[in-house]
Image 1 (cartoon, one colour):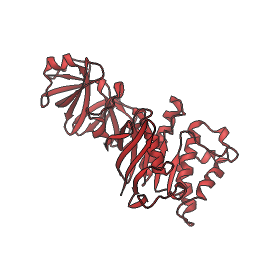
Image 2 (image 1 turned 120 degrees about the horizontal axis):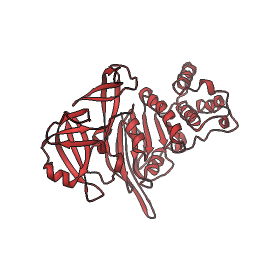
Image 3 (image 1 turned 45 degrees about the vertical axis):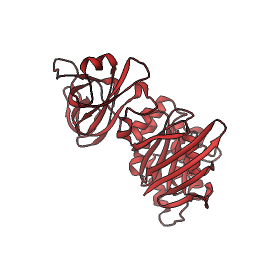
Image 4 (image 1 turned 45 degrees about the horizontal axis):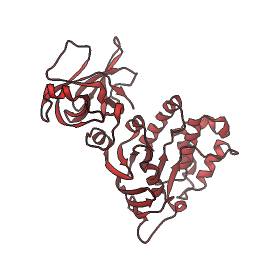
Length: 358
């Protein structure tokens, strides 16, 4: 199962030229700076823009040289930046609109599936409200539910958090995480926010000037140092870990990953739970030997893999391997030369801050 595509679309001053090979389940993020072509690519997948090329979704051809399935015939759901709910209909009837347009006409399972989606997105208390009485995050949850009720084989989201302030985004993200865990269809998510991508995506397509300059599993791709776009203060690594211990006295937890253990702030996550960990490059320092007489608790042996120049001539981004896990560190070129940080060098990393993001 996969989503595979080739699109070329030329406009004055901009050309989209993309090859895609995406997994058939999970969240794929289309990531890049504004104007790089993320939304245009999403619209090509939806059939809202018609370039040359082809598109296959889980073995079914939606576009090639001889066939173009129009948008209304493609079994997909599309969630825009704004919820686009019908203002004169309450939540229940907005959901009815989606259910009546289901691509697979089922009957016996309709009610149970609808109840499951309402429960998944926490919409039960909101069913009798008009959109004007909903927060921005609540409106987007209704929009997602309406899209899911059409029984799509592919779900597209175009920056669904763009219109929300920071507090509303933090409230909304757990609902998207639930969606990621429960859906058995591919979800393609457009964003230019590194924190959203790090928290939600399983797979990532990095776009620049209308082209996909990198694509692959999230952890591997974010840890690369050879990409043409720079993340600045948001550069860092994301990986999976398991909560293995909690220290009630110091309110710290220990998480284990393929490379060792890390102490993190205890946020109440149960023992044995799999979590997603994010370590920013700015929070990683490098030493030639182990130092225990420092306040930093997370000290791990590592190997230098590669490095690349940053935007500022004084800075360097270093890729390290800790066990089977890749990390990034940002330091000055002067420090790298002083420590002789050539690829293959064995060092110690000191990790000042670790975030559990999901």
